[in-house]
Structure formats: structure tokens, C-alpha cells
Image 1 (cartoon, rainbow, N blue to C red):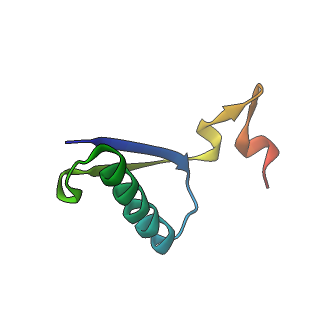
Image 2: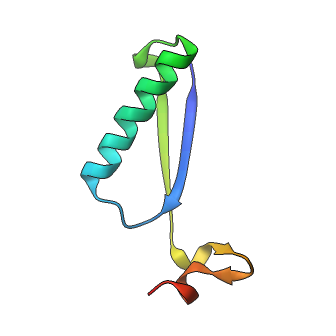
Image 3: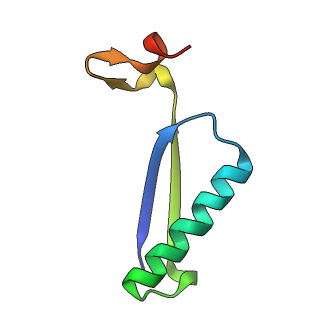
Length: 63
């Protein structure tokens, strides 16, 4: 029963997230042999103010 967590900055559309869940489910099922109905995908969206790279918050460098 694979569990996959995808963490990403907020701002994706529902269609993009729907496609992501579909594609991740397919790849995990194909590579592990787990039945598709047993693959669970969690999407954790982060605010740009709560995420930093190279010492800078993304909200400070991304308009």
C-alpha cells in the first residue's frame, strides 16, 4: 500500500493536481506492482512565505 506525498508551492490548478495524482498513481503502480486502488497520493501545498531556498524565502524573490 504505497503512500506518496508531493510537496509543492501553491498555485496549481485543480486540473494540474488531478493530472499529477493520475500520473503519480500510474508510475507507482507500474514500478512497484501495487494495485492502483492501493496507491495513495497526498498533495501538500506550501505558501511561498513558508518556503526558502539559498537563505531566501520564495515570497521575497518571486513576484
